[in-house]
Image (cartoon, rainbow, N blue to C red; front, side, top):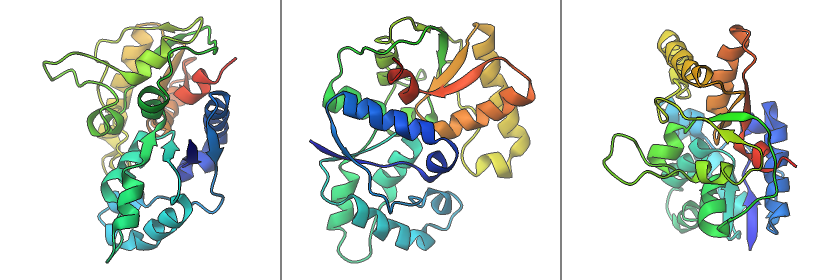
Length: 244
């Protein structure tokens, strides 16, 4: 299995430890991982702002970088979903279609393809799981609580394999954090209030850490936690699954 590692631009710039943890975790599981060094932004910010037509060069570069892999794996649900739904090229779209069918978020890949059943990782803390909207409602990484259906969470299942980790219960386990990409800029007050509510649920249940599969959401929550001078910290799920 040949896997291309897709690292979102904000992870590359602000949270390189998440990228390293993702790489190390995949290699520890015996995956043959490659990192195309010329990759840049996938184009999601332009699309979110209504300028998807300006991301044509991003699309072409992404296709050039990631053609030929069995799977393309990313530690970001939102960026993975953007590629799945919006990667296109004018004219012949066959190369883009092949990419769209092979891109996967990390926990989705570990659960559905690698089919991880046990982990050697250890993390001796109380952890609250934030299930981001893109992963949950776009990629079906977890069941939505508003549906009358059997509950599941791929991220939660993986966390339960980590030695010493206590996964706390939340009152509203799938509530949006308020980040929403450009939403946190255009609707700052609403975004912050939603983030504060999300954090309060974790603090009320004594979380030491808040984790998730989207560092963008965790970045939003981390900013609020820092302003509140809270002892609660954020950590990407890849860092927990890779912890020894």
